[in-house]
Image 1 (cartoon, one colour):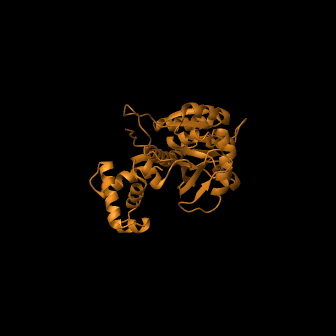
Image 2: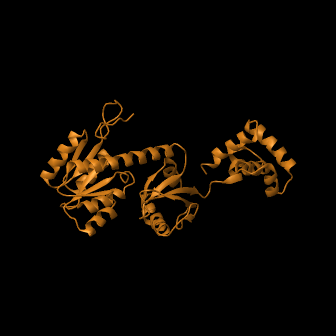
Length: 314
């Protein structure tokens, strides 16, 4: 289990853990030396790059926990490097703190628009830098833990930035996109523009976007806006049966049995289900008795639990 030092950074005391790894990107030897000394004293493992393109190559190979990015550098500046970093789903979750001598508001905004989580002006004050890093590393760990938990639920969930590009997705989403033959090019050229336009308007939970211009029926359902401004969405397989049809297919029920179970799982009493389905409460009871036998359960609560586990991942 990951432990932390008194400084608040991850420790290597536990054999299965490692120290926080931070990539420092700056073309100034003096800045690199100052930051390197401060981070190493805090127990942080330091990687170094002198410009943006080199930083991207290192990030892809090493997957650092955080990047400290100078804004103005030769070849590729920090703004462009950050934009490219955030466009890569495997790197997008890495928090980026900008470091620069530029203090004009337009540069601060430019850094945040590029995907930075924070902004420090030079000369860097080591204690302020460490304090900011602790906050953002903690947030990144919490986000990673939440994503890991969601990965294990079997849900088709993904987070999408305002540009329409996914920044994270469960394995089930990747599998469904592969099934639908949506490669990276199609994702960026076809789906992302539709998502970007859709997300530019106010959305409420449950609203759905049906994708156009793809051969396989896919849609997304809006779940919520996260604290980082990204949208949490559920990817929906248009060819996967839902509701009562799914229960019928997955559990081997008759059409009427699956309809009764569906409404019971949705919290309806027998009498309410009977009214919805146009049958008598007695007939509902008879169908439920058959459902109990087929599912190997003893009561409606257990039967509803079986149904809800299936419906939760539709």
